[in-house]
Length: 218
Image 1 (cartoon, helix red, strand yellow):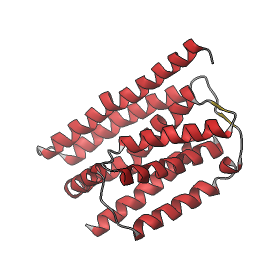
Image 2: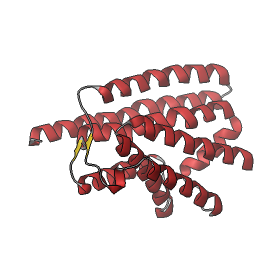
Image 3: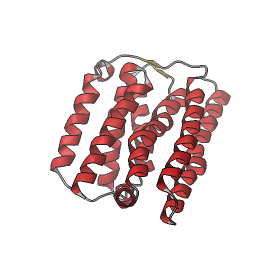
Image 4: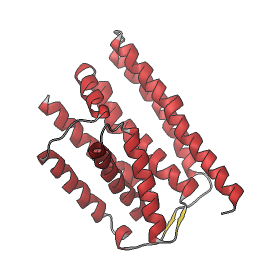
């Protein structure tokens, strides 16, 4: 890629990230504030679902337009069973080893007790889709569309997983590594099939299991 093209792509990807922090995160915060002030959960959930659907549709169209992911197959990206197996092992390990909750998890636990329908809908369906587009799909489109070497693939996994971890507000190195590993597993699923839907599916499965465990242990 030429220098101007690289900076253009960096700028476009920055817009993607800013759209999450400036637009969608504020919408989510506003909905939670209205709920805390006594707003109707079914009504707020409906409004949030419609707004989220529009935002996801925009990300999907943005992601689809004018490109194709090319990944050189290696042992790391040759089979979907690797990320699936790693996710199962990671979930089992987390269930056996307790640790300090991240700021993100503490917020989820707090709001889950107050507004279970809204929070379940967000963390099981909306968050996985949006996070995969932002940290995996659109990063690949603008910065790593052609991964011709293992080094490029590892750099992509490292950067996408780091951003994924920072989105979850870790307050310690241990928490950062937990989300980093999780993000790496989702990235492998994406690269293996070159299809964002596989990463989204694994992310949804992970969040569903985590949500059920939080709900049952409350």
